[in-house]
Amino acid sequence: MAEQALSAREPDIAATASAIGDQSRTKVLSALASGRALPASVLASEAGVSAATVSGHLAKLLEAGLITVERHGRHRYYRLSGPEVAHVLEALARISPPLPVRSLRAGTRANALRRARTCYDHIAGRLGVALMTSMLTEGVLAGHDGTYVAGLDRLSSAGQSVDYRVTGHGRDWLADLGVVVDRIPRRRPLVRYCVDWSEQRHHLAGALGAALADRLFELDWLRRAPSPRVVLVTDAGRAGLSDSFGIDVS
Image: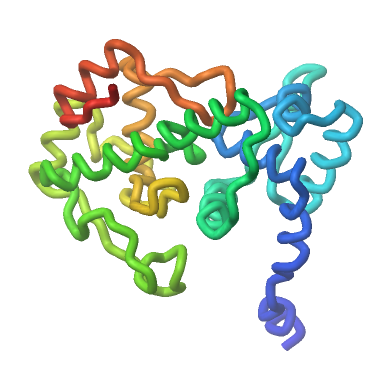
């Protein structure tokens, strides 16, 4: 009975919300939503705080279980503890007011994030939504049309979600692109989606979303910008995305 009582305890949402609910810690988590492990120096720069200050913020995020730390020699690298943290950040972004833009640099970065960014290990922003839309139009995916449906999407209504699936044609189409569905590691569902906070539509997540992103980086159609999360489309990518997905990124 005691074990059952412990397992039935309610989650302490307030504690997690408190850990997230600081502007500097939010910026740290947003930078780590790139899916990469980053050193404290980069995170301090992203948060606009000193090395000593970011150390305290990282300690609180570690205590809350929102990030993990890896040691490489004398250096420490931090990353999100899992994709579910990125999903929570995306969901919060959808219901949060926009930050005021107080500099040209901040405005440029905000626009770049809206154009193309990583959401943990898959592509988000206008490009992510365009990829999803193209795959639905081409019949690679089936199950829905990619629009956000209040009350049905898993991020807005627990227990209900749109069910996407890869079609038989889609398997062949993806293989031609270099993404072999049967070889994708299945530590999580093959097809999931996120409600994109900037576009209010679905972008592709799950194991397939990660595999597709990996392939686009491998082809050098996409490159990571110096700023965490921002994704750049190369000249080869403009041609490839146009030919394969019908996406005009100009």
